[in-house]
Length: 279
Image (cartoon, rainbow, N blue to C red; front, side, top):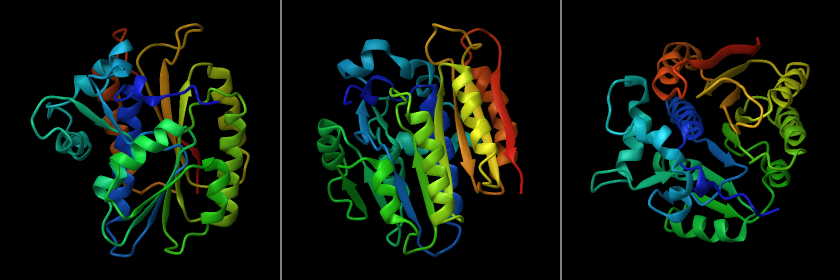
């Protein structure tokens, strides 16, 4: 149950997509002075050392943030890249933020973060990495379960990030159930659901369920580094966004082809940018 550690994957191409989308949504929510709540169902450690044994084992960050850091060729990525740079004040690329640290760097005094994590070591690291950030509440609890008690949020505005490791097959169903729960309890919340493409059939089944759920305004953004192929591990990952900012689709239409070309592992640009469910 506690085998997954994101430190092995920090800063890879999937994190680039996930955290760029996260930054864009938070920035959009902050266009209004009213507070909002950030809820992270699978928070992880919050901050990762790219020189650690974990990160160095497969060096996945080299085909993700490593290809983009310090480069201004894709202006749309600037806010995300600036956030990463702020965590590396001495220059170079030594640290990479998980989604809780991405949020913590952006939250205003009126905003709150609710961070769920079950792995005992990761909870300890998360609390240490976010020490002194009083807006951030860390809970050693199953985020799928804890989510229900928070909704609807007091602020009536929320971003919910759902990104389980999908090591357990039931996670594919649990994320669909979580979307249904959020829609039932707080239909106006923005939800960002991350998924890995290891078996395309599982993703196709999941997206069919979401499309048939009755939830409206759903966009899908996917970034790949090679064509789908059994036995090759994660070839792509995606973000399914419910109630996205109205600006997000146009930006991703422009960015994803360029980003896919930059991070491609086979010379082809692998991406999807589509409306899963309309208004």
